[in-house]
Each structure stands twice: as C-alpha cells, then as structure tokens.
Length: 375
Image: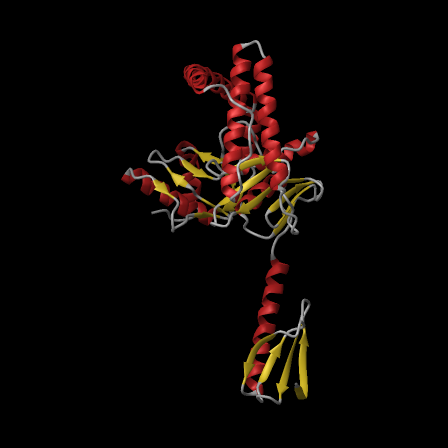
C-alpha cells in the first residue's frame, strides 16, 4: 500500500514513478505496468536511479535519430546479411529489411529470414515462392549477399519479423513434394543428363530436408522409396565421373564467359575506375575497388571507410609476408559494416560475397598510401 506521494516522469514508451510504501518505508521505482524496478531506503537514491534511466532512454533515442536508414539498393542485402542495424531500406522502399527478415515490395513478400535453433546455431530460410522480374532481381541480390558456408534452407514458409513463425509442417511437406516430383521427372526423362540432373535434385532435396529437421529438432519426413542401394551406388559412381568431366567443361565455359563479360563491360569498367557516380555497380566481373572521397567503393555496390581499408591492406601484406592464412576468429578485421572472413597466403581477400584478388588490392595500394602512412 502506498502513501505520502507519487512522482513520475513520462517517456515515449513508458512512465516511471516513485512510491513510498508504509510496510517497509522503502522508495520503489515503478514502471507503467506497476512492476517494481528497484527499491531504495532514501528518496534521493530512488530519484537518482529514475534519472539515470531517463538519461539512458534519451541517449538511445538520440542514437536512433542519428542512425542512417536509407541506403542504395545494392547495399540493403549486405546490411541485412550482417545485421548491423535493426532496419534499412532503399530510397523508394521497394527493398527493405526489418529485424531478421528482408522484403521485396512489402510485407506480403518476405525473401529471407535469419533463424536460430535452441542450440544457438544459425541458418537462413529463403523463399521458394515465385516472383516477378523485379522481385527476382531482389532475390538474386539477397542470395548473392549470403556467404558460402552459411546454411540456407529453401522453403515456402519463412515467417515474419513481427512474430509470425515459419510453418515447419508446410516446409517439410514441400521438401517431400519437390523430391517426389524430381524422381518422377527422372523416371520420365530419356536423356542421360536429364535423368542424372533430376535424380541429384531429389537426393539434394531429401538431404536438405533431413538437415532442416535436425536443425529444428523435428522428426524427419517420410520420402518415397529411392532406388536400391546397389543401383544408387552404381548411379553415383557414374555421376561422379560425369560430374568431373562436366566440371572441367563448366570451368572452361566460365573462363570464356568471364573474358567475354570483361571485354563487353570494358567501357563500364573504365567509368567505374574513373569514379563516375552513375556507375556504382558492375556485375559479372571480378570485384573492383576505387576510392571516392573518404570511402572505398566496390563494384558490387559496397562502401567502407578509407581508414579501414588501410588497416586491411596492412593485414593482407602481413599474411603475404608470413605465408600464414588468416581466418576470422575472436579478432575481427572490420571494413565499415562488414568483416573480413579470411585472407589467403596469395593475398586474396574473402569478405561475405566479395572475393577480391591481390592484384586489385595492389592496384589500389598507392592511392591508400598517398592519403595515409602504411607500414
């Protein structure tokens, strides 16, 4: 029971009051839900505590007001992937994220969402929904921003930022449906590469479903009967040999395509290197770097401070000198909002979806050295 007085201060989210209780003569600091936050023997102690909460609330408000929320479209997927802030959007609001979920054109179309299981392991749920051409571009950009090694589950239900959880039943049923359809297509196909492709798809879908069930602590779904083990082993042996041959052919085609893309994008590359503000992003060629003002910009649309680039250059040179690769551990090398994942002995830097060669870093080094001392 309270008596004597009650004094309070209003906040945008709640109101704190101080009550003097006859039962103990303590001064309680109480929030708007009548929850006692702290008790003091003196009124001054309670008042000081209340004022400290007030200052902390104002500080958080000020930080929130200063935080930048509008970025170029190319940076939104990267900011979402690394969860450097609670929300961000592009200038027209067609691509944005709120908390763990990133959306295209509104809350009706979530693209992907960060999730965590009971053991603290993290993964990403990525939509399998069909989409328009523009949303397809958003999905492609988001998928490209996810580093290799991150567990991604392709599912129809990913949930929302405001409490709507993914439907595990729907997702597991989807895995079974997709695996079954792939097996049926393999049975109907006549060409060897079609049979192999559909069969590999069925196996991959089944394996991903099992990983999904294990991740969330669920019972694995029942799949249709796959071929007998000896037939499966024979098929896998054939597929392994065929895969090696096709991998070599694919590498050759990719190298030729890369040379062709670089040739076709020559003018665009020159404009990017010259600092043309209208040529901020260049897709299809290895990541390039340039300095604009006090920022380093990449040809994939990411930017970070020059000062961070100097520290990164120092780390790359150290790796090249020692011949010992760097792997991200307790000590992180930051590049603005992003972090270097690893540095190979040859100087190649891996940061998220960026793989930057030493040749490109070396090309930028003189400009970094001219604007600051590199040891």
